[in-house]
Structures are given as structure tokens and as C-alpha cells.
Image (tube, rainbow, N blue to C red; front, top):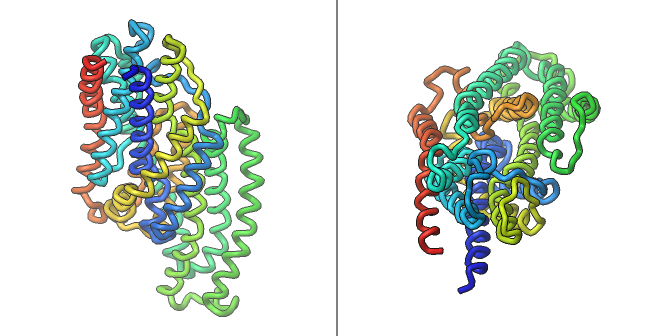
Length: 423
């Protein structure tokens, strides 16, 4: 059989398999808390995430990507472009197998760390330990600590503000009408800034921070203004009269109404997170595929590659298939296995994750979306005491994070040696 057919076939198969596993494991970051709080049914969440993930991947997915290997492996030392091709296929195999296993176990892991581990594996197999850019790897490793800690702290802070300012007051309904527009404004502004900084950069729309802040503020003010009208009408409908808003009677009923109000906040954040995720993390599958195809057609190794539309389509389709058929396992873990999620808690976690991602993008910190949302959920649980957290589930999740790099590296190295023997 012609070697070119074999290479292209393996590339498409494992690129699609990698995208499938990204959809199965990583998309839960956007919708897990919305499902857990019952703000969205699982079926609705899948449909919403599928639409926005696909849109983000196709419309603003990365068309120009710096080769993953060029940052992790000293790519200039690789002796032949065919070695790079086999190495990238091996990296896809190692990362995909690990993501599939983690998803089967319901464990949320970082897809970025998985593909990095795969690249490390083939890099060591080809060049030895000196062929790896260890300072970069160490920098990536800092996300194991930074992401969950920052996300957890911010989530706890946001929820405490909501709890003390609304839920634990003498009149939650009155406080909701008064305070929620400010919360919506802030949440919308953070979400728009995340979108501007992470979701649109591949369209070469390079807005300055003050420009993003102005546009985001205008849009957020409009959303907050109409949200206040909607919230007021919704509450009045529930209690039958505007005059009853001043009453502090029936706290239990008021609490339920407030939680139901926050159910309408979460889907918007989930949509923006899904769009941003599709725009950026699809590159974990399409980047290696494009690197392989570029090296194959040019018969040379290049530091920068172009990602064609058909490659983006493979990534987008794979993500959606993974989400629809296998995404429920990790969604369930994030939604109800770590701690109990209510709409106010879910909103706090999603907003905290978006804010952490925004800060990471602005400061250049290697923030992991997966680790951030898990940390945010843990932070919410801590506000209710350590007993509110499922420690056994957390032990499994943390263990999987530390296993990710060495596991994918070993599988990738073995896969490379096998491919190198066969071809």
C-alpha cells in the first residue's frame, strides 16, 4: 500500500478520535454546572453546547497555529520530517487513549496537558530527555496549582457575596431585584471580555483592552437593563403582586424563586464558554493534524502551519460526536458528584471560571479550563464546609491530573516506536 495513503488515513482517523475525546471530556467544562443545577436539561445542554462548540470551531477556530512540538520539543533537532509525522501521530494516539480512559471513568482532565504529554513522549523517544524544553513543561505544570486555587477562591468569593447579599437577607426577592442587575452586568462583562480575548483572536480582531472594555460594558449594560425588567416581571408573576415584594414572609418560597431566577443566568455563560472552547481547544486536535499534513506535503518541518477548513471540520465534527455520545459521564461528575450544585452556586462557578480564564489570558498565565472549573466547584463546596465535598471523587480527579503527562508520554513513546518499526 502507498505510504502516503497510510499516513493520511492514520492522521484523519486519530485526529478525529482526538477531537471525539475532547468533546467527550472537555466540553463538560461549559455545561456541567448548568446541568447539575437543573438550569438546563442534559438534552438541552447538549444541543446548546453542540451549536456553540461547532460555531466556535468553524467560524473562529485557529487557522494559523504554532506547531505544538516547536514549544515542547526542540524541533530543529529532529533529523527528518517523517520522524515528525510519526511522532505527531503517536502523540495523538497517546493523548486520545488517555482521554478516552479518563472519560470512561468520569474524570475531567486537561486535553491540553494530554497532547503535551503525547508530544513529550515522542520527543524523548527521538531525542532523549535533552530534547525536551523542560522550563516550558514546568510552566505548564504550574496550572495544576494555579488554575484550581484561583478558580476556587474567586468562586467562593462570588457565592459568598450572593449568599450574604441576597439569599441570607430578610427579603431575598427585594434584594434580587436590586442587586442582580449589577451581578448580571459584571458577569456579562467578564464573559464578553473572555470572548474578545480568547474567542475572536483567530479572526485577527485584536482589540485593545480599553476597546474591549468599552464595547463589553455597553453590551453588558443593555443586557442588565432588560434583565432587570424581566426579573421584576418574573418575580411579580410568581407572588401575584408588586406589593408583596416588600413582604418578608414565606422565606422558603422566596429562596426557591431566587434560585429559579438564577437558572436564567447560567445558560448565557455556558454558551459563551462553549463558543470560546470550540474556538480554542479544537486546536489540540487540529494542530497536530495540520502539522502532519504540512510536513507531508512540503517534505520539510515548519514552525508555523496553516490549518485548512477541512481540518477544522474534522475537529468540529469529532467534538460534537464525542459530546453527544459520551459526554454525559464527565458532565455528571462536574454536575453532582463533587458537591451539590444549585443555580446560584453553578452561576458562581461558571462566572469564576470565566474570570480566571480572562485573567490568565491577559497575564499570559497557563490556565487550564478543566482545572479551573473543578477548582471553582470545590470552592463553592468549601463555603458549605468540607463535609459538602465528595473527597473520594476529588482524590480520583487529582490523581488523574498527575497521571496525565506520564501516561500519555509513555503511550506516545510506545506508539512512536511501533510506527517507526512498521513504516
